[in-house]
Each structure stands twice: as structure tokens, then as C-alpha cells.
Amino acid sequence: MNQAVFISPELVSADSIRSQFSSAMSAMYRSEVPAYGALLDLVSQSNQAQLQTNPSLKQRLGQVENIETLSDQRHGAIRLGKASELAMMRRIFAIMGMYPVGYYDLSVANVPVHSTAFRAVETQSIRNNPFRVFTSLLRLELIDNQPLRDRAQQVLEARNIFSEQVMELVNIAEEKGGLTATQVELFIESIVNVFRWHTEAAISSELYKELLAEHPLVADVVSFKGPHINHLTPRTLDIDEMQTQIHTTGAVAKAVIEGPPKRDCPILLRQTAFLAIKEQVQFTDADQSNQNLAHAARFGEIEQRGCALTQKGRDLYDKLLLEARSLTRPLHDGSNKEQYLADTAQVFAEFPDDYAQMRELGLGYFSYSLSGVANTDENLKNQDIEQLIQRGLVRFDPITYEDFLPVSAAGIFQSNLGEQGDQDFSQNPNQQQFEDDLGAAVANEFELYQQMQQSSIDRCLEAFNS
Ligand code: OOG
Ligand code: NI
Image (tube, rainbow, N blue to C red):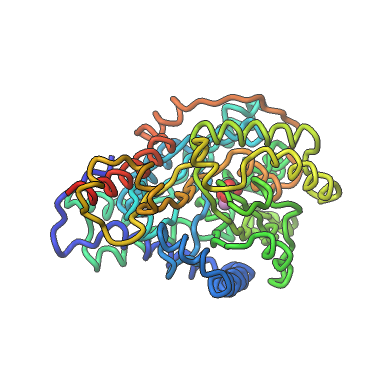
């Protein structure tokens, strides 16, 4: 997937292109959605304070992360309309060192899309810049209303979201194995343009209303000339605190935090958001009387990441989540929030809240490193990693979860889409179709974490055996 190719010196590294892309997206979104800028500032101040008052947290994070860029935004999300767009996005993201990882079927949650996350896959690349893009593809085949589906398809077929310049630069990058600094500048500018907001819709207000009634997500994807970035997300070290502060940005916070409840040892991913802003859209109607429609699509989100779980850990998480949600399903208006929080906390008490225990039970992935200088004492040769840990020579730190959670993602989609229309899709994954459309297989996240863990073990053993 990510073969080490020879890169000539004048070519910019993929990690650097990704960093520049992330910053440019941030600047664009800050200017288009001012509450997002306020959110970034809020999170960054809170993170600074956390690191200052909690040195052990700082030390642990420093083992696996780049502390300097901790408050930079960590992910964004786009929704694409057709297979060719997805295939082209794969080529574009590859230039930034981002590869498709994981398959998410959102039909379970009544959202007619399936998705993957484009992200860096190697330890050092992730450390250099972990920015990822949650990328969804609309599944019109799940929409029952055939005539409406056909009209939507026609609209999507007619659009081309990539400029000549994008196509040209992608071809050059693929041919030459990268881009020069000047080309990177053009590349980033032209890709950021793909994700800009379009105030002019591609359709009439009448069609928009029909699509909206069918499903708001279909309206969001089909109505516009491009796949506007629908949110960006910085990382916080204290999401519970941030949840109480979001209102200071002038925006309204989503009712509940998605994901596992608050713990001493965070696992996976917790997310919350501010609700989408309502933006005026100009439709194609000759008759301007219908022009007062506002579309809610763009919002801001924050995430708190914790330890990546093994399949065993994930199975336990999924079981507990199901159990908690069978007791209380959180409502968007927040009216049963207290009950939901109490139920999740009680159900999740079963998940050990201690890294050593999680490691012993094989629930999480850890990165192993030397506690001090490598000791080449003959007695330490051929010791296994457990013995080295027992002697205090090797430490372990949780590997950060880099991916997403389908139930949480659905909660994020839904909090911003409002009413869901009449249809109830049943669970309907189709990874094969997704990969055919993508033009590649998606990587398995568990295998990637396993490799990261194993190579950290190998490095430690090597240090004592050389
Ligand atoms: C994507 C929602 C998923 C997340 O953080 O789980 C997501 C979308 O609304 O398009 O970004
Ligand atoms: Ni998100």
C-alpha cells in the first residue's frame, strides 16, 4: 500500500503536503464558519492548561504523539455523490499520504451512505500529522422513490467536481512520484476549492424540497456543485469540560457526547459537535419567490481520542454500547440525557479502567519503549517483553485510536440532519461495492494497530539483543 518509493529531493513529502492541506482547510473553514475558529481557540487553550497541570499525561502522550501539534485539527468529513468522485478522491488523498482504512455502513442508522477514513497508516506518518478525512459515498440505491432517485442521479451524473488543474496535478504526481513545492501550492489551492461552500445550488428549490423530504442527506449531497467539507474537528484532552463551554462560541452544542462514557483511561473516540449553521442558498428557479430556503450542513466538532482496542476489546465495547442503548437511546433534544449518562456509566463499569489491566486482558493495543537507556547486559539477552516490563526496563503506552465508530458517526450525522424522512433502511453493508467504486480495498484497522504494536516490541527486543 504505502511502499517506500524513491523520492527525488525536489519533491515535497506526502506528510508535508497533508499538513499544508490541513492548515489550508482550517483557514478556509475558519473564515467561512466563524464559530469554528472560536472552537479551535477554546480547545487549544484548554489543552495547554491540561498539559501544564498534568505532567504525567504530558509524558504519556509524548511517548506516542507530537505534543506540539496536539491542538491542530484532526479530521474533517465529506460526502460524495458518485463512484467516480470516490475513485478520484482516493488518488488525491494518496498524494497526501492518506489511504482508505475501514468500512462503515451507516444504513444501520438510517443514513443512506457508506464510508471509509482516509488517513496516514504508519507510526511516523501519523505522528507527523494525523489529519484524516471521513469520506462517505451516497447510496441512491437505498432510496425507494424511483422517479426521484433517477432525477437525483441525473443531477449527479452531470456534475464534475474536479477542475482541470486538479486532474493535471494528480496525473503529474502519479507519474513523477510526487509534487514540487510550486506544484504543491497549486494542488492545495485547487483541492481546497473542491471543498468550499457553494451558495449557488445546482438544482431548483422544488427538487431540493422533494429531496429533503425523502432524506436530508440526499438533499445535502445532490443539491450542490461540490462536496463542501461539512465539519472539521480539533482534538481535546477534556471533552466533558469542552461540552460545557461550546456555547461560548455562540453556537449550540449537540445534546450528548458520542462514544464511551468518561473514564480515567480513555478508549477509542468520544465526540461532540455544535449544530449546523443555517445558510441561505440560491436555487436555479427562474421564479425567485422560493429563494428563502436555508440549508443546514456545516458544523464544528471536537474529539477526544483514547486507546485503540483489539478485536476482543472492541467486541466488549460494542456489547456494552448495545446494552446501554437498549436501556436509553439518547434523544436529540437532550430530554433524556441524565438517564442516558447514568445508564452508560453503569453498563460501562464492566470495562476495566486501567491500562495495565487492559493490556493483561488483551483489550487494547500498546506501544512499547525503553524506560531508560538500552542496557546491553548479557543477562538481559533473550528476555521476552514481559520480563523486560517486570524489570522496569520497558514501558508501555496506549496506542491512540485513529479511526471512527459507526454508531457515533451516525449520531453526528443525525444531530445535524434533523428529521430523517419516512424511510427506514435495514442494515445493508456492501463493502464489495464500495471497494469496487473506490478502486481499491480498504485496510483493516486491527491489522494496522497490531503491526504498530509488534514493531514497537521488536525495537525494544533489538535494543537488548544487539
Ligand atoms: C460524517 C460524520 C462522521 C465522525 O466524526 O464520526 C464523522 C458526516 O457527517 O458526514 O465525521
Ligand atoms: Ni467528525
